[in-house]
Image (tube, rainbow, N blue to C red; front, top):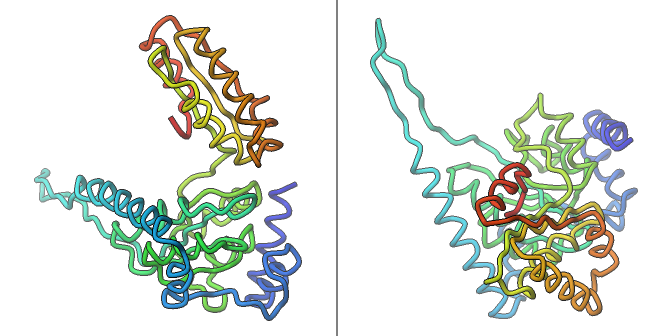
Length: 297
């Protein structure tokens, strides 16, 4: 169903351009009216960053710096090369794409982290134009886009944002690649445009696996599990542990935290889909993790 709905949205926007994009965004509640602002330049993002307190600014900047440092190290680990072969030489060149579209979810909660992890990485790779798309962006989302140094932010989400990024609509340039997580409509739309532009992957519901033993702090482990469980009722929190008593302690911490967690209705449903696996030792636990291949470890 989501794939069919996404296909209809893509076809409408490809045919009707900016008008189709705005009509769809209003219908799906991304925008309040057809006159709502949809595109923010870097200069227009700065006031949102300036509005944050110093602590929040520091968190965004430090996080961006760490992502940039690692991304640059990754980039520098791959280099242009040539080698002699029979009759001549062969090799490869490393060159950045021109335009990257970075999607950041904005459904239940703003995810400035998604903005930073995609846009900062694109900049580190040398991408010339970086566009972020996010529905109903919060101040933290705008601010993260500013810190990442994007060229612009499209305040629209869903399959309609994927259409704008893939086809180039209105002020939005056509992107060479679209990256970032999203809901089932975003994922469906990315799969449908993957023959037109590149995509990173087709992400499923959020997933985390925590490996723990007697040395762990059960409260910290519970917090890590809930940090993903609160994303979506379909999220999958997994605990792999070497001690049954530790599992029971973590379970107790989960119950205590759920009593005051604002996102408890969502997290509780996700926890029902999760599980704990008891292993004889850490090596076995690592083996279980390798079999699962979790999104977050």
